[in-house]
Every structure is written in C-alpha cells, then in structure tokens.
Amino acid sequence: MKVPRRRRRHLVEDDRTTAPWKCDDLLLPDLCDNLTVTEGSVEIRGIEVRYWKYEIQSPYDNEYDYDYSNSSYSTSSIGSIPIVAIHGGPGFTHNYMLPLKQQACRGRPIYFYDQAGCGKSSLPEPNISVTEKYPWLLTSEYYSLEELPILIQHWGLQAYHIIGNSWGTILSQIFALDGNDDIKVGLKSMVLSGPLSEAKLYVDSQWSEEDGTIGSLPLYVQGRIRSLEDEKAYNTVEYEEIVEIMTSQFTIRTAPYPDCFLKSRETANEEIYVGMQGASEFTIGGVLETLNITHRLVEIPIPVFLTHGKYDTMRPAVIQAMQDVLPVVESLLLNKSGHISMIDEPKMMNAAIANFFDRVERGDLVGRWDSTTTTTTITTSSAIRDDNSEETYFHRSSCGGGMVISRTLCFGSEETLIVAILLLVVVILVGLILLTVRRDKRWLLARRNRTDYTSVPTGP
Image (cartoon, rainbow, N blue to C red; front, side):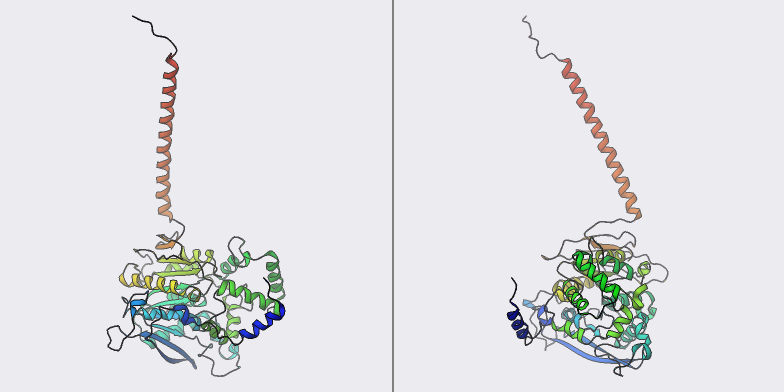
C-alpha cells in the first residue's frame, strides 16, 4: 500500500530524530560485558595509522565477572592466536567490521586499524591531493607489503590469523604471496570475506544473466545503468539513487543501516576509492582494473576460509575461481547476507570463523610455509551448519587440491580417472545383468510355448 505523499513527508521528518541501529545490538546476547579496547598508532611515511585492540580478561581472573551461562559461544579458545582484521574500500574504514570484535569474547584478541588516508588515520594536511603528495596510497603494494607488515611487527605478533573483507581480501592475498618471509611465517590462516582475485571476472559475473546482481534486475534498469555508465554520469541524482538501492540489496541488507556502517561511510576517503576502484560502481577502473592474481593462489599453502553472502556482489563464479586454485580451502555461503556479512549475519559468521580457527589451531586443517613445495595435506572435521544455513560438504578442490566446503562435488584429474573407471565397471556389470535377465526370459518363454496346457490327460 502506498503512503500518501503528505504523510510520507511526515514520516521522513520523524525519522530524522531516530538514532540509527547499533551494531552492538546485532551481537546480543553474545557480546561479552568485559570486552576492553586499547587504542594506539604507529607513524608510517608521515601518517599516523591508528589501530584498536579488543580483548577480554581471562575467566580465571578474580575481576572477571562475565556470566557465560546465557551465551551461545564457548570459552575454550581463551588465550588463542590473535586476529588481524583488514577492512575494505579502498578508502573505507574499520568501523563496519566491528561485529567481528565478538571473536575477542571467544578468547582471541583482534586488531582493527584504519588504513592510511581514511578514518582516524587521516592525512596530516587536509584538502591535499593524494595523487600529488601521497601517490603510494594509490598502490596495493603499500597497504599489503609495507603498512600491514609494519603493524604486525609493531604489535609483536609471532603467530596470527587474518580476516579480510572485500578490498581487504586483495591485500591479504598479496601479503600472503609476496610479504616478507620473516613476518608472514607467523600467518596461520586467512578468512577472506566477500573475496575477489580478478577484476574482470568480478565485473562480468555481476552482469551474468544466470546469477548476477545487475543481471537479476529488470531489463529497463539494466539499460539505464548501461546508459549512465556510457555517459559517465556518476554524479547525477539518477545514478546515485540506483547505487543506493543496489547497496541495500547487495552490499548490506540490514536496513536502516546501523551505526558502524554509517561511520565508515562518513569517514571514507573518496579520492583513494576512485583512484583505486574507479568512479563507476558497476565496473572496476583505476589501479585495480587489471587485477588478476588467481593463478598465483596455488602458492598460498595455509588454510583459507572463503565466506560470501547469497546476495553478495562477489558472485559464485568469483568464489569458485579462487576455490579451485587455493591448496587448502573451505567456503561458506551465508544465505541472508549481502557483501557485508559480518553485519547481515554476525552470529553465524562469528561462529563459523571461530570454528575454522579452532580447527586450524588444533591441527585439523594443516598448512605450512615451505619454500620448496606448494603441496599441502589437510584433514577435516565436521562442517558448520545451523537452522539458517545450507548443509555443506567437505571434498577436494578441482584444481588446487586441498579440501572444500561446498554444495557441489568436483574432482581433480586423478579423482576423475578413478570415478570414470568405477562408472565403466558399473555400466559393464549392469549390462551383463540385463543380458542375463533377457536370456532367462527368452528361455522361459520358449519352454512355455513347448508346453500344451489345453490337452486333457487320459485315464489308465
């Protein structure tokens, strides 16, 4: 039912006084009361890069008074390996990832930081051109091979996990591939949320008629997007309205948007975003236009967990391309999520990530840095499943080896040969059985034809 225009204006006026939803509320009752945060900074090339460490006191501490009895998470991970969270963008901030601070309630300290040039890691000189004054902020190498390693060293981390989202997954992959060996040797596993490794595939999959985000829209809407793209009409009201609607469908489906997402939008650096991503929201331009590191992912031997939403801008083809190459990989589809699944399904995502880290630390998922080989062995335990998720299965990846959680089976070359031989044997056996049955039927029919059931026997 449509709202009368006059009443609609009244509703908008009322909403202006309404506080946004809080991301902390999305975590209840699993957000612990005794979560502490420590803020700090480190100077990198003249820019103060700020960070936040979330952690919780040990339950054996006398001052610890949190009651776990009403919480759904376990305290078995107290004192486990810390986590480094890498936000998306480029040019966004860490705030929207804060629902992942619930990992600290499970015993793993988690570090968030704003990448240089955005949020509280703002440039020391306001209204200065990034291109002219800070050109390295328009390269992926700075964020992945300089800024991130400096932070890890500053924190003194000897062992750690990484959680990256979107652009942060690109940085995570580059770090794992080309980072300093002395630093990345401490990397035990990675969670890549809404990941991508190839720009062209990302764009093409969005326009796919089968399962694309843009490809799922009415044809008229698709036509208007193409026209606006051709005209480069990025600053028009029509373009911005389409982007906002698409954001609520495929980027973040929790609407009205909660406070942590709004904070990230308000403090983002648009110049860095456009320089790296391009001005278009439906293609990739800028520095990332030619990105393609999929073929190199086989060089990452540590366990990797790919998470993506059912309505994610990173479509199944993007995930599958990575999944097929990574040697030690699992994936999880979140059925109610867009691109920012840590807001759309924070409880499910936190549980799945904690389960993954637990199994890595127990040795159920084995991956080791070794300069002489990229072959990795892996064993698995049970898959994550709850009432809102699809059932998942462990099996081998088609190209990269390793194990995968997925809804479809795929086989590598050796497995394909074995399956083909087994199928051939089955076909031959079935054929022999059918031939035997057919022969027996002919024998019975011939015997029946030779018997005269109408003759009357004569007496003695």
